[in-house]
Image 1: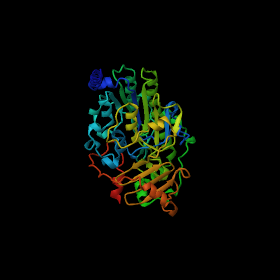
Image 2: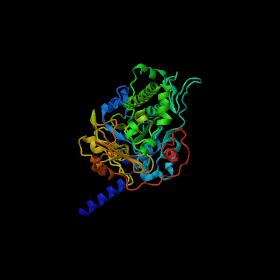
Image 3: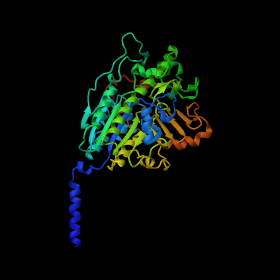
Image 4: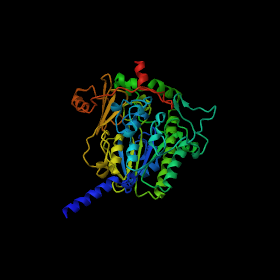
Length: 473
């Protein structure tokens, strides 16, 4: 009898091993993966900017779990997205800027898309998920290519101040590319899928240019616009390396001279509102679909953005504004409506968290830790630091209550995030904080990979940032 039982168990195990990935994945949840480009912490649920109008992202946050202190691996599109999709940090891969072709160092087998495909999922996408200069469509079962262009500012109409491009458009919602990117996801959610799916939606706004239909500008009357917190002498205690990383002379000085700072803020808020509208369309489609009760939703922004704080515009810096971004989870059976956590977490956690929630083994190369314990219990112990990297050997360590920055030349900044949320007072030179700095230094990476070769100039026209500053030095 015992021999029979042993034989039966062997047959069952063999049968399980021979089952197809689709059969093994049959009961696994779907994933709706929503990315936004250049969206800082000006989202309603974060409470950072009372002017922001983001009812759809706020609605999603109310349905599930919202992190209030989420940060990317880097304040720049390509290294941030590469780290998120590969599970490996810039200082591991050498992907530091927008000109680094990550495909030369990260084989297809390491990517999040491949983990889902090998687990039996159909992997689909539209819009901007990777930095578009280095797309690798072979990772996807289906992808919306060439969704079309967008209207441009009419000839003779002012298009902004220098490199900060903005202006209202006389067009309809559906005339812009993000509307068609959202349409693709809506169509997929309305179809009968024959196996679990990973559906990525890369909304391109609020990336510049801040050109959206005029009605979104009208929501933010110019006379009511409030400028972000600003200190005229904010750079006085910033070391040379930090000031060099900023773009005061090229962006902020021309903006001040133009007298159009409020117009730029208005345009950014309008563009956020347009992006939120498209997020709402996708969420509405999910809620009307057959997949509403078995689909994990994760929404994230690839990094933050400055609008004059520290005399800086754009991302490309290691301060809070360039890095903080929204991060929302709705996981059926795991998250509870209206839950929040103020614990600093990394967007690199998305890869291992999705693996754990979907019952897929996390590949060994993935460096970050899953945030599932926090999704289940926001009071769970969490001591993982967040490392922001901008260029080789330039890092910020973000932990609860503190941000520590160390530049390649040894310059330092330290901020008490509770007493000084605007990071106006650099404490690094004060002797009484030496022990705090020593403790935070321990989290800096022991090894910084050499930067991989620059393949091409970023077609979006984004600043080369760190490399330009090094040439200036």
